[in-house]
Length: 381
Image (cartoon, rainbow, N blue to C red; front, side, top):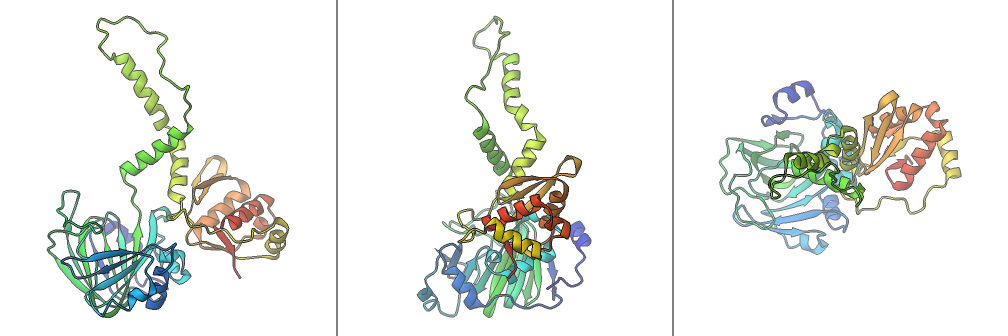
């Protein structure tokens, strides 16, 4: 499926992180990629993050998954919503929904959350701290959009949901299957199912906070530091008041902290690993039986199509002399020559047909075998 008549450059210029945009009948050939029963089944699994929200706007309750099958029989026909995170990790047809949005860099993409709602179901008026495209998969949903919110916006007391205490909609639309709504960060919005079998696909984007970046990089740097790297002042001289922290001491201390922070190359390497770490690193995607080198060599030289695991994150950073630093699932690989070309191809598409030159390259084969055995790549059956 492809977006129909969508001008990416105009969207980025006029709407991205600026204002909402309704895009009716947005897909060239919309087909709902998932049934409600399949979504309900995913929510029953231990390794899948899911929530069940029951009740109207006044006092909705939240139940965290896994959801037992019998629970669905007790829900009735109104005012409940099932939310399942990262469905793109488990359903290839849902992962394919991300392809038209890759005009935004991959490292910014988070996941596809899918919701099923009974008539009147929703999560309540709220705002997100990230961009989101809301694709109506089946049924109808009324979306109301309000003003800009921030950390000072008053919220209702609720242990699990960040609901707005006051919400005044300024625009309202009813979306049907194939319609789409873009919501920038901070914009108040509220979605309510209209009728039965309402399914919505929320394509969310990541926006790391300043505290996440500072805290994450500091933690990484501290892990590399040694106990003997300490303050020293071999040119110490007497000062008039021993209680003063002298400017020279402040200068030395400040330099101890900032000299590592100013290393942009080191930061880039850390961020590549940080941003490519799996959303759910505790989930093991490794094959039950590792592929042996001889078996792999026979298949690889015969010609194969490689498929990226939708749960794996791939990125690269250009280095000197045509090399690239490849990042997959929080690990980094320095690639040069033909391996660098392969790494770029690997990051640019979800299905890879290696060229004959790549197939003949031993370093490329070694990298592919390693990624196959970590579960980040698979050979198309």
